[in-house]
Length: 450
Image (cartoon, rainbow, N blue to C red; front, side, top):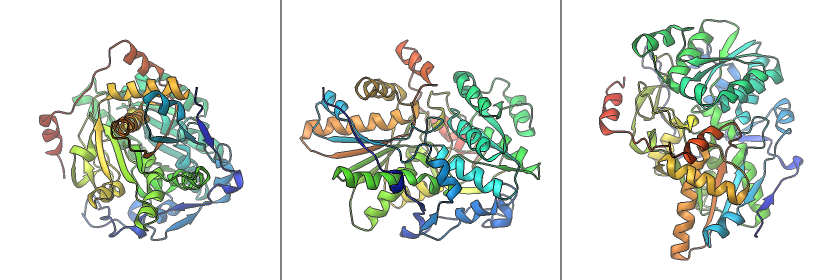
């Protein structure tokens, strides 16, 4: 049987700078707006939520930002992460395509999320913050922030979307093991949560609701700040260490990707892999097709409206120009809890509007089928989120089989499914359904745009 091939970098070759794609774009993205004045927000408007260092990264015009040594020191626990060539999967598909995947499941919590959780905790601790609040869907972000807070001596309080809280109990236990306090969302602990429960007592929750609860709590405590696991510019900035490493590893492999595929919920995993390659594409050094893949049940890029909208359900956050399904949108409780956000990163939305990338949506049954095939060939059980990218990779590889094209395909395997196995159980039992977002439900949700 053909073996997968592993490309690893020496610790000394780990990137020491994050990459900011904004200066290289043909035009800058629209600014966030204050929810009250509808004017562009300034640093003072964001100060109740974020430390100054992260605010400056959010609006930075610098192409590169140095990674602080204490952050690099924690990164060295698992970075550089490996790049694999999926030779066994290629053989099983009978494709002439060459498939590579950048594997982020080697981190302490099994996903890419610590790439931003660690610097966020570091910068907050530097500025005297004692407590961080956040939301989480599948629990990967909450686990990552809990780990990062334990590393830098901060308290961590997490609101987990009720559907995922019930589906993934071991994520809660992981967060608690690292010292976090975890609540199901919506909860009775906040005005935002109580308002939702009064109207929908059986609400399965959403990331938008959980964000409202975490923001409300942070704003009420001078010693607390809020941490976000995706969507915002500084979060995607931190994740670019994935793509920067992958570029070096492709040099080792002597190859260049023709197609880059990533799953997208809020956009951090996708942007982290894609942005350094987009820089190379804009500079004319390579020309990969860059393709985002989202769930058919929560298709913000492919069916959402490009408009200013709140990042949370209660309207506490700044207005962001993004592809959105509406901040009132409550997605079906699909198993890819990390992809159930109503909006797409403003930066990725802007890049999509510029025509620099593509987007497709896929139902979860095809995704889990791809996840099973990947596990049985490559030996890694992928988290529900990256099965979307794997399904798109398999589509592309089978197309190459039909046409005889020897394309090079790259994807980010952003996490493993060791704590998501009940989702595979649902798939094997035949209980999994493809929840397509109806036109009526979409129209109703978009009617609430500000």
